[in-house]
Image 1: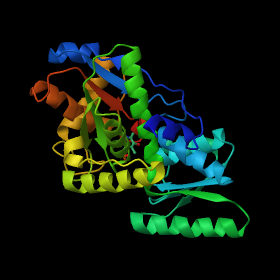
Image 2 (image 1 turned 30 degrees about the vertical axis):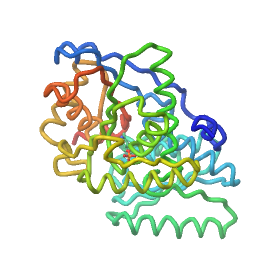
Image 3 (image 1 turned 90 degrees about the horizontal axis):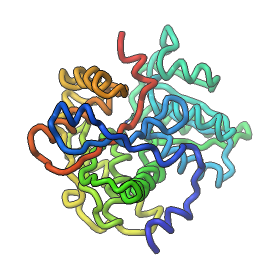
Amino acid sequence: MKLQEVMGRLPRANLAPLPTPITRLYNTENRLQYRKLYLKRDDLTGLGAGGNKVRSLEYLIGHAMEQGCDTLVASGQDQSNLCALTAAAAARADMGCVLIHNSPKPDANRGNRLLNHILGVETIFLDNTPQAEREQFAQNYCRQLSAKGRRPYLIENGATTGRGALGYVHAMLELVKQRKEQDLSIRHLFAPGGNGGIAAGLIYGNALLGFPFKLHIISVEDTAAVLSAHISDTIHQIEAITGLPFSHTLDQAADINDAYRGEGWAIPTQESQAEVLRFARDEGIFIEHVYTAKLMVGFTDYLKSGKIDADACAIHTGGFGALFAQYP
Ligand SMILES: *Cc1c(COP(=O)(O)O)cnc(C)c1O
């Protein structure tokens, strides 16, 4: 069976207005004296402050509903984009929502936390608990909910699972269709790599479609070796769901670059700090510090240094809500 058919049979909730637009970056082109540059607007996914996690949630919530679940349980830090988008998606899907934050209760409701407050979801603060313990707590909490007669659906590992990554297999099908319909010449595609869910979905989809794009994954967190291991794990999980083998090595299938991550997750670099301002002032589009700022630093460096020489597109993965809490 073909990828498209298999994807069409998997349970999926309709949450995002798709396809998201592809915008030309005229002012960045002029500044860099480069050929055509594009931005895939996955910040415009139509729920909350928008972002990539809505695509994951379409498949996770589809799966949850298929199993008759009535409550989504997500965990992350208090500014987590996953948590905020889960809260909004739960409202939309008419489900309950519990957020478990491994960070102290903040004094003020800022950024994504404000949106969660407005959405009125149940929130638990665990202080600075390590991620593994947070996940353990979430599992136990689900058992307690079940004992009370609720039907919880646990969103694990920041939605970076095979099921969540299906959102970016879908995005790859969408990109190929959009490129054809709009007669775009995009050859290189750039995306950020955190836990590697976006990367796994894109790499898997791109390979099964015969490599329509050259993929560049810009790590914002880990070394290329560690990120690659996460991506491989997630690709295996996708294979188990779709039944269609990947049958390539990761090295052949994508360029995974850790040169722009600085000291790691959520720690800005000088360049990424400047890029938040540069991008807004050039394009009128806001990016935040953790993901898209580092992605755009990598993207523009590839263009400036002549590492690539064909039309290119970066994926804006959103996170706008968190921007309001990223300036003290
Ligand atoms: C979670 C997130 C990412 C990273 O996604 P992974 O699948 O973990 O690599 C990128 N951008 C934003 C805005 C996110 O919230």
